[in-house]
Image 1 (cartoon, rainbow over the protein chains, first blue to last red):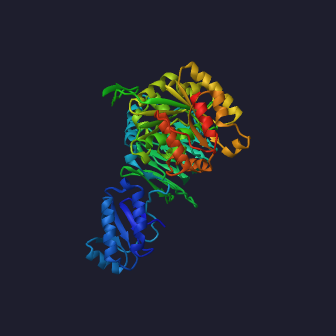
Image 2 (image 1 turned 60 degrees about the vertical axis):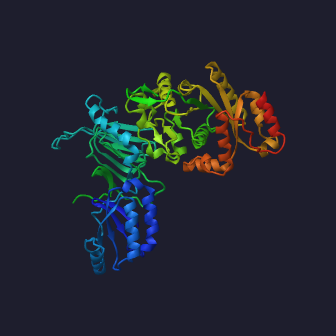
Image 3 (image 1 turned 90 degrees about the vertical axis):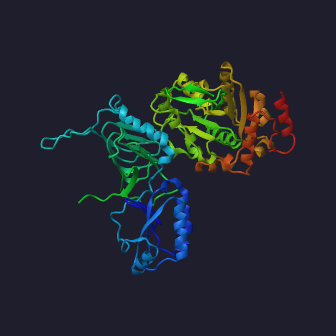
Length: 266
Length: 279
């Protein structure tokens, strides 16, 4: 159970598993792992029914201030509502159940913008070059032609790749890419549109390669070495390996790459 | 300081003094070129030098893994050569060394023909303008990739293991480097003193006897290397270990210091080494 999650609105701290004082070292460690990443975020704290000790909570706020994270509100039972009033933080109601709408950052990727400032500028410049220099190097895509009655696709063509892509292999496509198989470390997918991998994505994927930040990357197991969408770059964090991969979708929200569990549209 | 026009058209301020460009090569594959490049690079950076490591093994990129930087690669040396990005944005900083150790990664999805000697020379020259040392990790073989890697170097560091096949290939390389007039120094890698003592392995002086080069390092076969290589933490970083001390000495010898060799094997080896060195 992760203690810190990134959501659409900022960071969420789940603090009901143990007394706050016991969780502090772990939080400290998480923040220290990627110090710049959290700058400027606002934080929501979720407690169980018991209010935390004031001492421990003050320590938490001091720690967050070091990383320029601001406390925004708390969630929890009735005791927490009183606590919120005392701590002059907004009370946001009881802890949300299920969390279907929650977007979490990582396990697969975490934005490391500061690392890549120069590279991002170069990626952004690609948009300007796009007109002169098409990305396509691939053979004509083996997508079956639209049958009568099916609407003809107006968008750039989609390339369908059957089988696993190994290290050193690359697909560059004006349009989108669908891979039926895995993408191994060292393999590269570059598409001006979206990327869908029906398998494990462990190599590098660059969607929206000519600057389209609205492109997305989907995989049954999204564990890329690196993920790029338009000019944004995210790298997998060190030392995390997932045991039970689930389908995930990566897209850009508020200028950084966010990965969320994939829920099919109804 | 002067303004230097780069191959991608941008201008950087560089100091007039150029760093040393050293190609790390062996001829035979699997003798430890990449591990040596990473470790010597780390040792030089630990001494306060600014170091750029260039992976010239296009298509079989490994140096990034050994350094643990694979996730941070965005652009590579081929994209720099083709003018698709600025040289600066392709360089990856190793945060363990503040701003003293950088990697210019190879392309993984291209092959050796994607670069030529002129491009490689221009890139390493530009790097030498901003660093004290440019170490070029050469691919195995004597073909296109080797010629590219060597074209960007002013000196060579030959890595070999005490095996007849490695030494034969190394000797061929020494000949090739000699034709280009590159001063060449030697690291004997993966030596196992107990085997040498039992007469089952060529000794360092046997190797030196054939190759006749200045010796700058004797690196023992150490299980730690395998482990640290897989974890992306070069052995030279593990302070207080035997390997870290050995690579630190290699760095000092490259700097021109005279440093006695670590006594791997008691008695005469050391004396004979000095003999080999003097000769």
